[in-house]
Image (cartoon, rainbow, N blue to C red; front, side, top):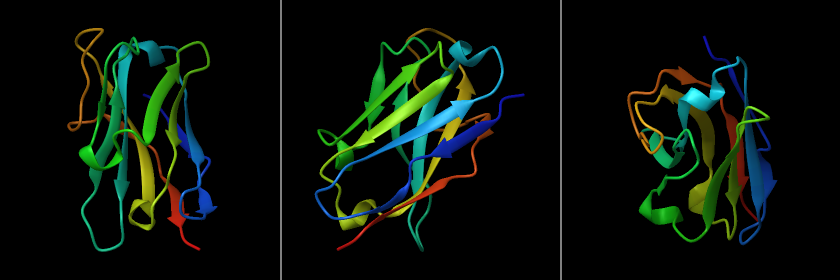
Length: 125
């Protein structure tokens, strides 16, 4: 069992930055690939970024490429999402998720095993 707790959301002005953190419980964090997903009001949840269990491989959805970065610290059981140049359309609840990884380089945008409860990011002036 893995428990995930997100933090770092809030209100930010357009062009601003936020860093989301996701703290995981358990001693097997390094066995899981991690992902960040978001759900905007009235829309379906979508994958935003993902990282392999080793951190060697990443994925970003097209709309955030060049603005967001994902990283992880396996010693701290934490994954991060650095969000720069934020836009109003980035407003959403952001969820952290974990999936047992088959290889060191596997990244996943679906079929996640565990989910956090989410943190709200609002981009508005």
